[in-house]
Amino acid sequence: MMNANASTFVPSTFLSAKEDKEGEEDVNEEENEDIYFAIDVECVATGYTHNDRAVAQIAIVDARTEQTLLNVYVKQEKPVVSYLTPLTGLTEQLLAERGVSFAEAVAATKKALDARCVIVGQGVLKDVEQWLGLVRGVDYGDLIDLCGIWRVFNAQYKSWSVFGQDHLVRCLLATEVAETHDAAGDCVKSVRLYRHWYALKDDDEKLACEKAKLLAIAPEPSFSKRFPSFEGVCQGNRRTCVCKAPFFS
Image 1 (cartoon, rainbow, N blue to C red):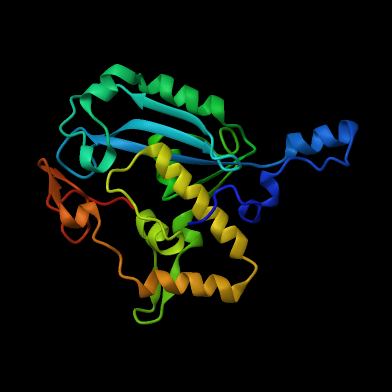
Image 2: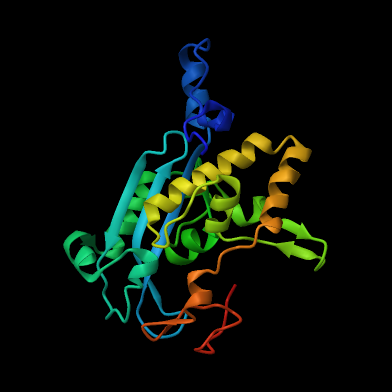
């Protein structure tokens, strides 16, 4: 298993300003330095189509330290059809006891970020802009999507293959994955997958070998493949969709 704190996996922008720089120059450099965070969002179902979702948990993890900076639960304003508990780990009791309003949760998210932040995650654009309404250049600086940096060209189908986070973790980090997800735990996985890619990005041969594993090892069936519908809620698998609602991505 990869050592999450190993310095070989930490990009230079994760590190503090060099000690041999002193005075105002050192302060300015640190102020202008990019900060890497991972963000993840978990949702509950507020209807029966795969588009009927509402944010129920937001987590932010510091990519340098793996410290959880934010782990906030959201009380639901609409009736919840399913908490999708086997997938999300969320329950009615958890949100009732620990939840805050969505506005409070987003405000806390924005407070933890700034325009220097580079946000890492799996399908992170949807989390950041669609679910949380964050603005590039104001609330964060840039995004790094694991789907993009770990995609592989599949010569058999002459197209790019992209993989879920669980498959990436199993193949690349040699770590077993629990079926139930948690936003903070998924952030840590994102950080480690990004560090792994960063350590290999300048070595084409080693990076290609790692990416070859993703095609060579068959992914385990996802929750949505095993359960096209859960508690009457469509899980949004394109091949087995039961609700016929449109797909927007």
